[in-house]
Image (cartoon, rainbow, N blue to C red; front, side, top):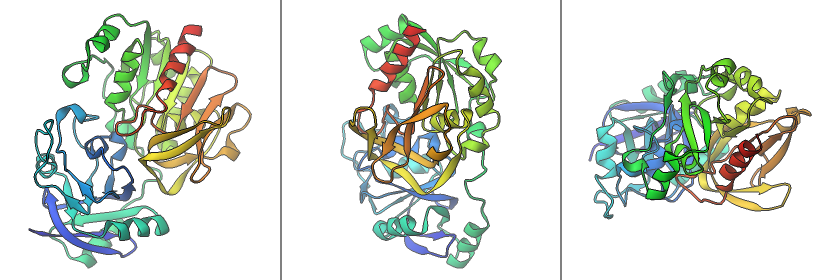
Length: 372
């Protein structure tokens, strides 16, 4: 086995073994507390520019397959695990995790004390880092320190679709005859802003009876309304929400003209559109086991999450109210706009991976479109 080094900007160094592609990769070092779902995590566009450490020690035991991909390729820049299974055991496996990372040029490191790393990131905060199979520790730390952080980076525009398209179920996305029937006779037309969308979101919109047109990040209010949508969907995505060029202005122009539903980055941009502020969390929320409380009912959902920024509730103003809070740290997990049919959540009701507790939010969006 070839040795590998993980070096962080604050000087922390971890020595382990290489798996996946050899070479060097860099990004913000973050951790995810999910026990399963590593393929959905790797292919989630919200992880652009980030190296993911999995807190659960065993990864790769069920391999990878095309059906579980949330986009066309992995977006995480590096993968950090305690142990990876060299031989997967699942009838669905098409290749091993190691082979999958090699195929896509993703550098991985295993054999390090991931508990120590996670405790350090929890205390010192998420930070830039480098994984390498070639460099010296001192040089890697220097490279990590020279890298810009996530604040101020418009990564969503960088990975957005270059042109609008109508989404069609095909291949692994055509899960069932019922799902195909829903797509064949949609009741509503939804325009989805692509800031780093996941396929699971599009599948659930289709299963809710929606025809979906995906549009680029830079789509203006006028261009979106020209498509005559019954509703507008704001997707997840990477980077700093306040840095996404033109996003808050476009969403602000849509409010009151068409129902709006936002998830994750879409939630943050909707909040910015009504005058709120966002801020970077110390180490973010990433995992499939995050408790969220709905304030109106007191109901608690266990949710899937992946975000490094949050909405400042003190800056939300009078146009919107907080509807959901995170029970771990009290941060905002959902808002409702008071003078327009619009709402959003910070967590991922589509899961992938994770629990399905919050999928009723897609029904709520459909009900808003039914009311017009």
